[in-house]
Each structure stands twice: as structure tokens, then as C-alpha cells.
Amino acid sequence: MNIGQASEASGVSAKMIRYYEEIGLIRPMGRTGNNYRVYGEDEVHILRFIRRARSLGFSLEETETLLKLWQDRSRESAAVKEVATAHIVDLERRIAEMQGMVKTLKHLADCCGGDHRPNCPILDDLAGDSSAKGDASHLGKKMKQHA
Amino acid sequence: MNIGQASEASGVSAKMIRYYEEIGLIRPMGRTGNNYRVYGEDEVHILRFIRRARSLGFSLEETETLLKLWQDRSRESAAVKEVATAHIVDLERRIAEMQGMVKTLKHLADCCGGDHRPNCPILDDLAGDSSAKGDASHLGKKMKQHA
DNA sequence: CTTGACCTTCCCATGATGGGAAGGTCCACA
DNA sequence: TGTGGACCTTCCCATCATGGGAAGGTCAAG
Image (cartoon, rainbow over all chains, first blue to last red; front, top):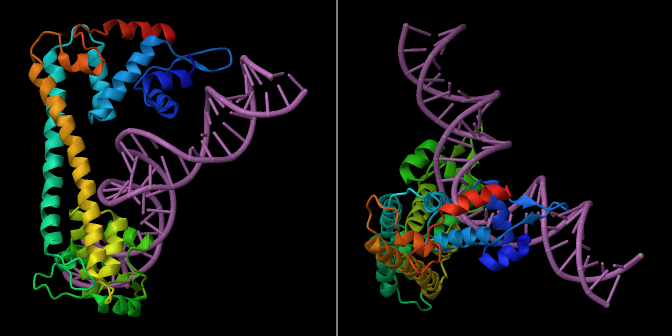
């Protein structure tokens, strides 16, 4: 099987397969006389594992850890669970961060007329101007003086 | 005011201030005879605006749009609201994506003993092995044959 | 034998940020 | 006057995972 077929079968682009090999995530493949990489079912299985791990948000580094555990007959499931749990914590932290942004933005957007008038609480917030009268149209002109 | 003081006053690192100038987000600052950039209160205000926009997750490109609207006396608040709304939609999409990951991972982690035994439903899932008996400890060895 | 679909390596770009080197400048203090 | 340290400057590199594309080799079908 050539790289294109392995890509097709695994859902991992040929570009990425070569990259994974380059960074040592997967072992260098055997080559045919024409220097083409050769893949078998096992490699496709590994690539699918990687793709699935990536789709769950694991970094390539975490994926490498999981891959090694997968291939380690004497692994302890606790080690796998630890990687997964740390990732869950990280995801939840990022989710909370984004939810905070959404909450703030929704509040601001709700307060914004969204019409033809220039007055805008969203810009007021960004400008750190809680008096809600902010207008920075003069700054553009002042900036020119400095440039 | 030198770049260090502007950084201090705005909360934007000197490195980033130079970068924002380089990509055209802010105008090139005036220089003193010694080639140092000079900043005034207006520039600090602009930098704080950028920092606030970044903290709400806006990209630098979106931030540039917002900055221009802020400095446009004849803006319509609808234009600002549109940028904010699109960003909210994007954030919510990413949140939902990550929540899906968390949901899957939590389910798998719950099913995982997390003990000294090798049996692990998390790895089974990653291996696409729904029969939950998967073990890839043979693959590592097979890979060596190919390398 | 040509054509097109593969494959190879190599370099570059993304987005936003940080790190660090090499060198110039300025100020305060001895 | 010298010196040290804290600034400033530009330039290059690294991150993370991925894609784009060029230049050139290979193969199979027509």
C-alpha cells in the first residue's frame, strides 16, 4: 500500500503521515525500490488511532503517550486514565474561558442598538470607557501627527 | 514615553507592540533621535483597546476591524454588533466541539478502571475497537519489521 | 512514447506570542 | 570621566498542527 492509499484508508492526509514520521510519532516506513513508503494494515490501524485521538483534542505529544501505552502489553489503565483526565481538565478550563467571553459579549451585544447610529456599548467596553460616551474618532487623527 | 513604559501602562508586551506595528495594526510610532519609539496617552489607550479585544477572544484581524470602527466617527453600531455576533457564533461552535470531546472522554474515563490492569476502554475507543478486547502490543513489534 | 496520476524532498505560510543574541543608548553614581 | 546596568534597536528562531506548492522522479495505461 502506498501513502495515498494509507491516507485514504486512515483518513490522515499524506502530508501528515510524512510529518508524523518526521517527528518520530510513527516509525519510518519501509521503502520499495522506487523509494515509495509502504504501508500495511497495522500502520493504517495506528494512523486511525492517531486520528481518533486528535479528534478528541489530544495533542500530538499526548497522542504519542497514548500510542505507547496502547502498544505496551504491561500498561496500567491508570496511566491512560490520567492522560485522559488531565486533558478533560484542560478542555474544561478552555471551555470556561470561552464561556466567560461569550457571556460578556452577549451582554454587550444585547446592549448595542445594532442600528445606523454610532453609539456602541461594545466599543465603549473595549475602550475601557464605562461612562459609555466614548468616541475615539479623534485618535486616528492624532496618531497621524505622531507618525 | 518609551516602549517599556507604554507596555507597562497598557499591559501589552513591548514585543507585541512592535509586532502590532509591523503588521500594520497600529501606525509606526515617532522616533526620538536615538531611534527609540515614542508613545503618548492616545497610543496607550489604543493598546489597551487591543488588549481588551484580545482578552475577549477577537483575532487580530477582527481587532483591527473594531479598532477602525472605534476611530470612525460615522460608524454604525450595526457593523460593530455584526463583528461581535459572528465572534460569539464562532466561540459557541468551538465550545460545543470541545464539550463533545469532554462528554466522550468523561464517558470513557468513567468506564476505565484506572487501576493496575492493562484493560482500558479509552484505548479501545481510540483503536476503534468496539469489542473492547483490543490490545495492540503486537503492533510495536510488527512495526519494527517494516522499519 | 506520452500523459496523467502518483510519489519524493524542500521550503514557506498560518496566528500570536515568547526567547534570545548582538549591538546601540542613556542615566546615575563613583 | 568611566563604568555598569537598564533600557532600546533589529534580526532570527521556536511554538503547534496543518496545508500549499514547486521541482523532480516513477509508474501504469493508452
